[in-house]
Image (tube, rainbow, N blue to C red; front, top):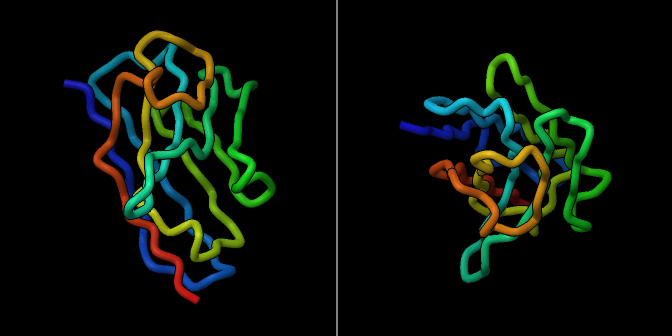
Amino acid sequence: QVQLIESGGGLVQAGGSLRLSCAASGHTFSSSAMGWFRQAPGKEREFVSGISRSGFNIQYADSVKGRFAVSGDNAKNTVFLQMNSLTPEDTAVYYCAARRFSPYTSANTNDYDFWGQGTQVTVSL
């Protein structure tokens, strides 16, 4: 059974930082790109960042460029999202996602086959 388990969410003040982790199990992710998405109340799920299996191709949404950084540890099947200079607009449930067989990043939710349960990130003023 494929599982993606996010951790690291929480409550932080504006300007602070959080580091999210996503641990994958139950699938050989050797050829899988990973992505981070978020969904705020009343809004659609949106792309945040993606990383190819090789780590050479990385994408960011314009809203997080320069503040967020994605990385991966292939040996541990784990992906991280370092979030700095957080603002209240970053408040959302953050989801980790994986593509079943493609090593390439994508900003399209429909391109991802596996999803985690989400972790809440709340940024206060």
